[in-house]
Image (cartoon, rainbow, N blue to C red; front, side, top):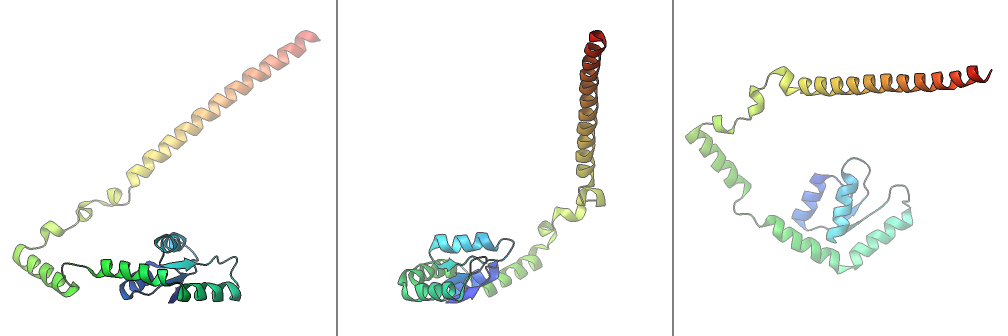
Length: 161
């Protein structure tokens, strides 16, 4: 059994080695990963705001005594390991591929973007312009409405006097 915070790499290691999990998610994507661990039946999660030594002990005991966690992680591990080639074979393939054909077709198009496109400055400028336009129109419409209401209100008082 592995007790960890819920990161992706720890999940991959546990699945590869068929080790049930007890997850204590703290931040980022960890709560989502912990939820997936529970849904797949390969472990349990603890709530960091409600954790006690007793809850940790009971969770560990539950994982170790319930064979379904081990059975589920074993099935997942077999699926995870079932690959057509090993990492070494895959690396050899790609090295041979690059030596044979070059790597121009593998190059990301992001390298051809200029600074403005790469950092999406044009998109942000357009969005800021739209927001400025919306705020300006809203300001003047609100000002016009209040002015009309003020004139209507004041005219009634003047006529009443």
